[in-house]
Image (spheres, rainbow, N blue to C red):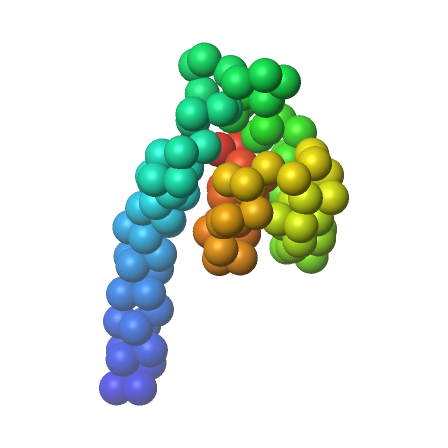
Amino acid sequence: MRHALHSRTFCASALLLAVAWPLAANASAQLAVDHGCYNCHGANLRDEAPSMERLAQKLSKYKGDPAAQQKFVDKYRAGEMFGHIDAHERLSLESATALVRWLAEGGK
């Protein structure tokens, strides 16, 4: 009985993860839309802003490294990396972390 319950719990967890994984990626893409990231990093690049594809390419070196991603987020939000950009500094820690993680994973 115990084995059957454990097996069902494992299967349910795996199914939930399989469904939630693509939703998390879509949530990050939607987060980029919601925060206006594409206003500067979209089809019509503003000033010297890189495209989202270029950002994903640059951040791919942080893929699977949450500590490095967090270090990047902290510097990015503080204006240490690209100068003081209001849109970057207004992002919450959670939003910035989700966006950096999404971009590091390929931004798709």
